[in-house]
Length: 269
Image (spheres, rainbow, N blue to C red):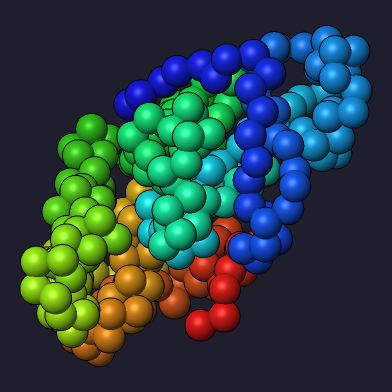
């Protein structure tokens, strides 16, 4: 996990409100005291103080359609953590802008800026940090063997499936083939292969969620991937167990409010 601190009072513009560019300067601070913040920059204080008493709000840099950002949104919701959302439109290349590269040199979303200015990147690393710093409700089982199984399931999505169908790879497929249909077919095939394994791994289970009576890292990962599978017109009927668990997840506000269409930067389908 990359953890760094953003230099004091670096300001940058972000796109908010359903993709509309607003001239909002968002300032990330390395200070730990709200009183110092208000004293040094009273005009900017309202940007970060959102009915949270004496605490600055964390910033989640993401994009409504990014499934990696979607995972982190679910985890934050389950942990009861409110954040300020800063959006970077991937198709417009906003994640490669100099101001964002100063925050995350890899130029990917999501990135989470903590209250004290540390920058965390990579969705699973962010979620594990949330789990370690806010242990309730747990997203991983207490038993080490069970934890390993949940992690293995999550990694099938986050390491073996999602990266093979992300925007960068699809752009490469388009460039190599000159064929948009080939790129869409590739993404559909990758999703079907990964989620076929997930369905086999959970088939025969009777729990409401992937690995028990409560959602875990496994559910956090596969629900957004199902969203990708739908977008690429995969045959989702082949995954009845995953669909059953997804329905249970979507009955929870933490999952429902995290879906792309409910984000401030969401675009019409």
